[in-house]
Image 1 (cartoon, rainbow, N blue to C red):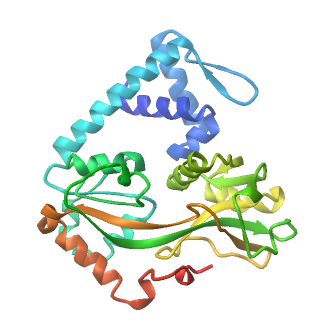
Image 2 (image 1 turned 180 degrees about the vertical axis):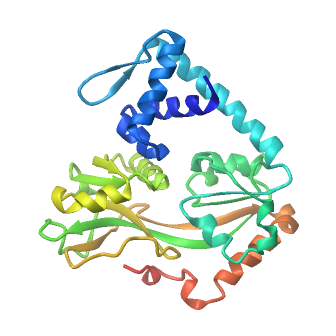
Amino acid sequence: MNSEQLRKYIAIAEHKTMTEAAESLFVTQSALSHTLSDLEEELGCKLFTRDKKNLIITTSGQKLLQYAREITSLINQAELELNHQDKLNIAAVNVCAAYMLRYFPEEKLSGIGLLHINESDMPLALLKNDADVIACDDFYIKHYKIPGLRKFVLCREQLGLQVPEGHKFYKRKYITLADLEDEPLCIRADFPSLKTWLGNIETMTGIKFRIELNMDRYTYLNIRDKIGYPEIKQLSSISNINYPLTKNYRFVRIKDVYSSRFIYMWYLSGNEAKVSTLIESVKNYYSMPSNYPNTLSDLKL
């Protein structure tokens, strides 16, 4: 067994379905099934049983999951300490890193380390100096007392639904969280920070989103006309990667608790010299007035 197999195994255990685990890892279900079969054959035990919808982890599977998390955590820590110690380390949600680095000097890009860590772990990574810069909202960071914390706004994001024509929300100007109670929705698997955002809203409000379908962008584009479910999504003031709306779809804002947010770039005041080039890169991006996120009207809805 190797670290890549263990990472895939953790994804299977956390998602409880091969479909969602494969989408989160951007691999095929067949490849993931082979990984699971190889692990079960090597260990000589069943790691999951199956019912109609989900995978159910066995006692042996639980033991392996505990070891897998400990091992991958140690590997991640070693990579941070050894591979990235001389780099400018950035952890960012969504595509923020792409915009932060758009005008970064090409000859210095080899000195950039992009860290793949959960939003909830970003403040601690900054506090421990594992990350020099993080890009996220203030949901998690406000729980930490970090001396010398500096920030400025990168973008603003708006939560809403992409609603097909004929749906009861299609002609609405906006909706509230209460409107979504027990409403079947779909979500794209290629935006993990959106799932985190929705989870935070559920924690704050007690509202439970009914996500019926979780799929990649291309699958959704091919079947969206057949399923008729609204897609819950976020629009960003700096991103033009959202696929275009057609006359048969309309973006309807969610207007409620934590349904819009600012994404900030956070760094420590004693680290200005190391992050100064990155700050200049971001300033250069925003030097064009059309790029700076001033108000919600800047969101291209």
